Amino acid sequence: MQYGLFIYEDERIYEDEAVYKAILAEHDKFSGELAASGKLRGGSELKSVRTATTVRQKDGQRTVHDGPFAETREQLGGFYLIEAEDLDEALAWARKLPLAAEGSVEVRPLNT
Amino acid sequence: MSAALERAVREAGGRVRAALAARFRDLDLAEEAFAEACLAALSAWSETGPPRDPAAWLYTAASRRALDLIRRARVRAGLRPDPVAPVPTPEEIAAEADQPIPDERLRLIFVCCHPAVAPDARAALTLRLVCGLSTAEIAAAFLTTEPTLAQRLVRAKRKISEAGVPFEVPGRDAWPERMDAVLSTLEVAYAKAYEDAAGVGAHAEFAGEVLRLSALLADLAPEDREVHAFAALVRFAEARRPARLDETGAMLPLDEQDAALWDARLIGEGEALLRRATGGPPGPRALQAAIHAAHCSRLRTGVTPWPDILALYDALLKLRPDPVVRLNRAVALAEAAGPQAGLAEVEALGGAQAERWLPWRAAQAHLLARLGLSDQARAAFDAALALDPAPAERLYLERRRALA
Image 1 (cartoon, rainbow over the protein chains, first blue to last red):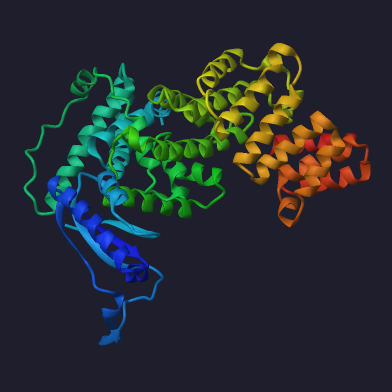
Image 2: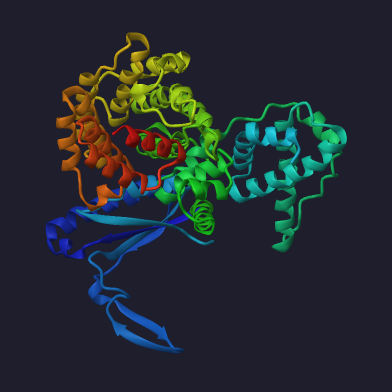
């Protein structure tokens, strides 16, 4: 099965350059390990939520809005697509996924 | 349902369903195939009489049914079906059914108690799939409506199937988290069985299941002290079941039970398990089991060691500072240090919520009665009786009220 690991953190902690550099190094290591296991299918860091633009459909009309679909304390900051035997394997990777401080990794199977 | 089928479903239903779920990795398919196999058994067995091994018969028939359902689903999805197997005769099924069914209940429990399953659905799912209770029975045990419970089960099963929860006993590294979820689930299941003191209600069956499953878990995790403690605790509690009601059907509190009626064999098993749960700082379940063991020690010594029990509650309160533990500690304090000290603790727990909580009201009433405060005691007994106690406890409270 394929799973998406969606990373939610308060992106303000990465305004500190040292914190950002440190987490990038950890992500390199993590994605390297995924790739070495043949489990990596894709993924990326996302630019700041400040860059988000949302297209919304309501009453048959599509309108464009500045900002993410919802304002939250933690924002979607990146994702990995991985191959895993089952949920337990996907959760094991999610547990190892680097997080700078508080944050969440949402694990969702792809509907393929 | 024929008597033979009813017995087979009760005794082996969980094992058969678990084996089906493990084989086909599909909870709904396992349930549906099992139900249809039972229907088939109803007519087949009435003609030929029950087979030698009814469980194996049901497993074989349900496996065939499941394969058939899978094939039909493939056809519906526009896929080429696998070649159709010839329909077996009942004799063929009986002949094939000589192999023992693998016991996959443990695997199924770990699926039902996976942390990815909503906590409020885990116990219900375990009781439904592993113990085979009906949704109506489970809904009654959890004081909810059948549609609500059915909805919860559907959501949980869908999550398990769509998110890819594995049908495996987890590896040792995942043990602590996973085992705690399993034990908490079994605690909920056992609490329901324990409430039914006479052991005649809908959950009477699963006291035996919890005994069996806890022994399985203890075998599986020889190093896990909390698992052994839980297995011990269930044995101590079940050992006292024959003494929990008097001849009129009224509840008897632990210290008034006739210890001669307790099951000494179960107590012995519990003590052996508890010995394996010690060493290192005790967890909450080890402390609870030790409290039960102390009560059961009266069988040998003739006295309840209240000061020991109080000390165990003190330790438990540090790990689980909740009202249930505080109330039980207050009751032990009343025995160890006198009803006045116990009542002071009970009153300290008081409040709007406590006043609607039957165990609190009952404890308050007893201590007031023991202090000779008859008017207050009778008022507290009335308040307790207004909280709709089960029949056995109602009888007991009414009798105590009359003596107050």
